[in-house]
Length: 531
Image (cartoon, rainbow, N blue to C red; front, side):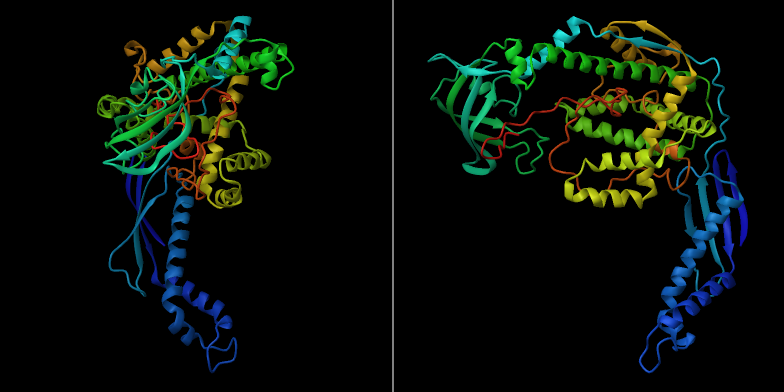
């Protein structure tokens, strides 16, 4: 094989490879010789079919397989001989006009990972901000829990419904006099002012009394999920079957027992543990960003543009999804467009930090055991329906990219924990508000020099997931087959959304802060079109 380097600029490389026709032909001959004893043909005993007939019958397919195998091995040999570490999969093009019996000419273009000197870790200093779980914080948590356990009782006769009251209603929806699927429900509970139904629905039920029958007209939002209802005017015939007022929730032993606990003391213990867990997550988030800010400040090496583009596209897709859920999507889109350069800097920083963390981990022997990896795969499989879990596990184990995507966040956390252990850590006790303010301040400063930093804007899609929060999975892998852009797993997720049992250990957020959602209408005996 002949190799000619045609580009060597920064992290970009390009090569022209020429594979002799004889090498391909030899592989074809070897394959024909291998399969000939297994070929069956009328008139010949098994295993006695002449090679020339095997070639005539299967030569085209054998040649295509031999060519592909030769090309793949040639590219692998190029990467090995030139000691290249691709950032993403190389781009390979075959020269036009190739025919069997001719030399194969191809071009290989790629970006390589930069050489990164392992940073000096001695003298690393971090500050851990801690928040004590005070009685006041525990009481406030219990109060929030009680607010979610609201109880309602029948209102006095003749009571006119107001915000905060609960109505029990039957309704039937129609458009131009024709009922539509999912537009009917019986005994549907609706709390006025909760925003559960589409805009205009609840507002027209203010002042309703038991036994009232009324027809209201509402307009489905332009971004409503059901295509046949988007932007349409609909009429709902409503019967008010009950009006209920909120009862007072007394926080005592009976309240705790209603939750399946022994009493109020046990509830306080559980809520104290939850408060401690939540604040520990915030503390880790603040420390992690502090650590990554320190690493980013001392390293400014070039990063592969293709990796930055892949990371930026991932961030932007999520931002676009959040913008679509905004009440004023055009305004929200204009806002993120004005910050496009900021998000690109975030993507570049995330890639750089990912490469740096990977280098630190490899230089210091940070590894993920087979047992940890198996647990990770099984945990990920729980997101799917039981009948799909085995198929998901098989898919992940047979796809290096999917496996790398699962592995990367865990590997990053292990490297971060390693650095926490190496650092000299001082502690300072603060309030939760002060801890959250410290995190907010870092979010506002993470993409700009200190002299330009200013408080983070309350954008429709907040830049909380910057490089200081999450290093991208692609960077951690450090190999072409592990560094390709993320792709979704094959199995279909179960229909119901998975509910988080507890906050993430390090308080991680998505690349963009979710926008407020329009809540769906409650469903009772039928799917409601007011969702």
